[in-house]
Image (tube, rainbow, N blue to C red; front, side):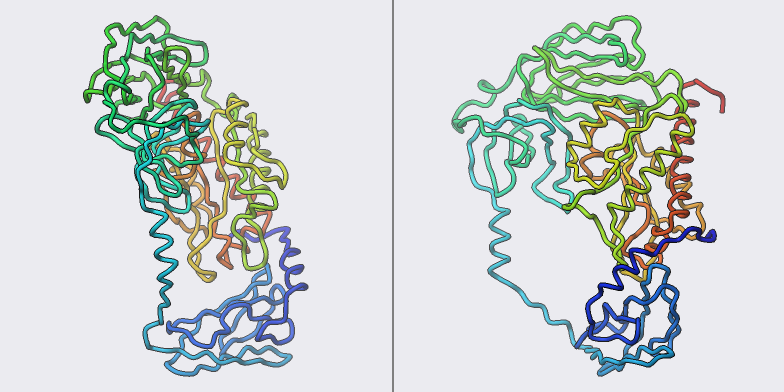
Amino acid sequence: MKRMRLFCAAAAIALFASVNVYAASVGSIVVKRGVADTVYKAKHQVIGMAEPGAEFKVNGKSVKAYRTGTWGVELQLQPGNNEIVVEDAKGSVSFNVFYSTDPKPVKVDRAKEAAEAEKLKFYPANLKVLTKKYAYLNYGAGTDRLGGAKINYLPEGIEMYADAENENLYRVRLSQNRYAYIPKSQVEVSGKWAPESDFMQSNVVLSESSLVYNAGDFDRVSIGVEKKRPYIVKEYTDPHRIVVDLYGVQCNSNWLTHKSGLKSVDHIDVESIDSDVTRITVYLKTKSSWGFTMDYSGGSLNLDIKHVPSQLYLKNLTIGIDAGHGGPQSNGAMGMSGLKEKDMTLAMAIALKDILEKQGAKVVLSRDSDVGMTIRERQDKFIENKVDIVLSIHCNAGGGPLSSLGTSTYYRYNVYKPLAENILGHLTNMEGVNNFGMVGNFNFSLSAITDFPCVLVETLFISSLKEEEMLADPAFRQDMMENVAKGLVDYIKGCRIAEGQAKK
């Protein structure tokens, strides 16, 4: 690793000064984790705080505190009682840990399990629901820490039939043979539905003629539809195309008019793939994707596909930078020394902004101070400022304090995989930075929007003592953002070559 410069351990010192009295401490050395009566694994980690750079021993093993003031060691326990001794020149302290080879007892709370299972059960609903702004469909009723597996966003005001519900979701009927799920927070109940009614008679509408034309900054595909209906939209490569499946819509589009001067769209095709599902396939001229939007207006569903920038250089683009978390309610992950993710992401976002502006780019920050922002507020700010690309900066967590898992990038749509690859490639070329991997189909709401290419960068694991020390170093953060910028520039160059604006 490059020699660290201008290192600041103020946060660690402040935390140490206010640390409570722990079960084991000697002088300035404090054990924060590892003092336990009984454990069920032979490998046992002892983690603590000390003066930055302090050297001492734990069970005879030499330990040196990181510049954040954190330290850690992994010990091999023997079955039965184990004495753990922490010592430095000023004295020593010891505590006992019992390693049991018996299976760890598992306490099962049957009442809690039953209550959680009840929340997941679906019951008949028979309701009409209307989508709110930024409503999104889910494929199924499952979930993870970022919510259910999202399909796509929908415009507001689309009415759907909810035939079942649980505590958090409605099951909505898209067509005769297709269902999806939608969070209750994303819709308003608009009335009752008669389950005995004929779905085809009461819900299905006809598609009408379609028109494709150059609308200035984008090509518009205007699809005639009698009423707002839900849809699923996907973008594919090889060939580059956008496919829209309109549910509750029978195909009656006999006129597909293509105006001259199209820059994004080559041609469109319309077909029926079920008795009440119409598919619109938009074949594109471009090799790269710069985002698209969809909304209903009048009697049409409009698909607006952004043109490729005429001069594909960083100096001609507007880059959105999202500093993850922020405000008193969202610290994000926190390191052992007290380092907060929200502070690191803001520092790195500002550093990246300066780097890109020096290269001529216009930059829009989602936040430039310690304020809380919802995902929707971040989305709105980037859309209103017509950004071309968004990079969201975060710090990862997990894997244990003694691990060093490294950096990773995340994207939702395959068309933006090259951007994630370019950034990750430069980050993992840094000395001491491991490759944690690249993740596609990422379920982050900001990445799910189609208005612009978006990649999330998990810089390093703030939960790792070693990587927390790296993140705490302003010089290292600067180096990391320089490499993010290099990845962005390489991606733009690749798009420039692909679009025929430059030679290889």
